[in-house]
Length: 308
Length: 263
Image 1 (cartoon, chains in turn cyan, yellow):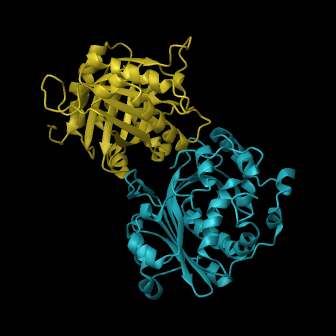
Image 2 (cartoon, rainbow over the protein chains, first blue to last red):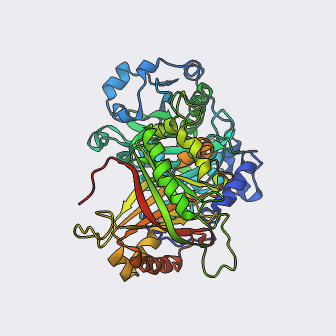
Image 3 (cartoon, one colour):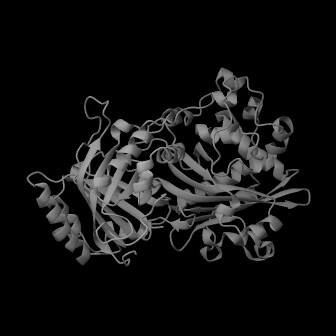
């Protein structure tokens, strides 16, 4: 994490959006009710995307998340480099599906093709969208309620000396989101691909770009017995003719230790509930169907800057 | 890096401090050795002295303002910790049942944490049997720092690290005397602390995001910590509630530790 070198400019909405941690936690209860846009939000030039008809998933694709896949064909985050073996992926792996691993962890795989999308668009979007609640809400209005950055993370995102591809490395997105099992506050700590455990020599040859890290999720209406659940999230993108191929993997029940190693942290004998794994799998199909549909258009309008 | 469970306790009514220390070291420590389960390492820290809040406070802001002992239980991984706190086939472990004889249990503070070792300018250069535990020192200062609720946890740790580096740079006596520094950062695994709460039986405990341990050669050197403390509390970086923070001077006691002595 770089030192804070950017001076906040409170004349700009990207800086004015800053809330304290305690205020954001309190606000998340309201956000989870999906309130109408405020007059200030209505005036934002990208507000029109909030009112668009949302593209629905291909029914055949969505149906692949109806039943769990064979756990013998899934794997843990220790084998993340399997995502760099394209021939094996295409010939042998289950690319769309979910299950519980034998150790109880939740596993999700998904694959999307985005015509006309480039790696630069991905890098811009993942840096641009956490700056305001509305930017996150327009991604998938039915289930994306809000987002917040800490002051130091906001300064990094808005630091013009940090390349878009690297802006999120070490940054936490505090999102309020419904992954088909009710609204949760999810703190997603983004990491570089090297910190995810990728073999970087191979990564540079195979992958176009990446976004991922580790999240902690807990119900917005947290009570004393609420479970705070970890998950490792991986979105990896590959250049293909005509666009970008996107592979997603989630490992629910896993976290990264301070040394950066993935560790299962489920109590012995406990599994991530199947409903939560399937819920996130279905949510992922829906939000990234929308993503591929609107990213080229919004990038064309706003992709030149973090500000608008 | 192992995961660590810390419990910061006050002695139960009716015990002197000497009674308490004797009991936890010789009786409870023996129980823990006999029923080790998956504990990798168990350190007791017997409190010699300490202070809560800051001099400008007119009364104590802490929910708890006296502590007698800090235990540190180390596990290879989280699952081992759960297997020890909730052993299968055992209703209550002996160690669990023993707590009521020495601790004011509803008053416990727990912190589940991962350790990060920080550099010191002057680690002890050579073995000296007159200066306590080889390689570290006889006295361990344990500083528990409360995050301001408005500060994001990720910024709290970054700001503390900047303030720490600046405070150490401004404290020549501390630079000379700190033999080892370890920061214990609260893990989010701790958010599901029902098992730990059940084991240690605390009620509505305050939450600390950070504990920092400083090792010094002897009690005569703790002025070095005070120099550092004044510097970090004067930092313009706004991240800690110093009125709800505290520090303890302790004597570390090894109960379970398979590691060979250093030096």
